[in-house]
Image (cartoon, rainbow, N blue to C red; front, top):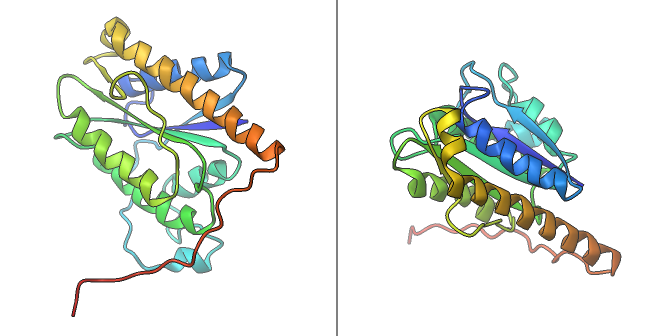
Length: 210
């Protein structure tokens, strides 16, 4: 079993990475393989809603950033952790652009359904719960179980060294790792016992125009 951890921070080894590494180490201690994927520092295109990914093997037609490389890695992942710094009480812009296209293209390929997902955010001070709400909504769109901890999934600090001083935050990261590993093992045990994933209905789309 493998968990893909996506680092949405422009700082490859910054505060968000420090939090994700704590999660990854705890997953590894539970026998779960991990990989931390950095979305990079180059501009990430926003989704234009063209739908061309559905005709392009569920890959985005824009191939000038790290999005499609992330989708390739997602295909072999059994669970996901998405980490972002807080910018103005929201995930940073590159991460939102990445997630919009990541889920729009990948959801049609069945990359996410029934795979556990966790959001992790890092802030100097505030805006964390609002940022978590943004990321968690991607999971609820994609039929993903949400992995929680013993508090909201956040760390605080202005530098990696300060994050290391956030003992409660680091404990939260370890709890995410433990809970993710437990859920993955439960899902695997269910498969071995013959429990099937729920049969999906055809999507019904409505609007409020009368």
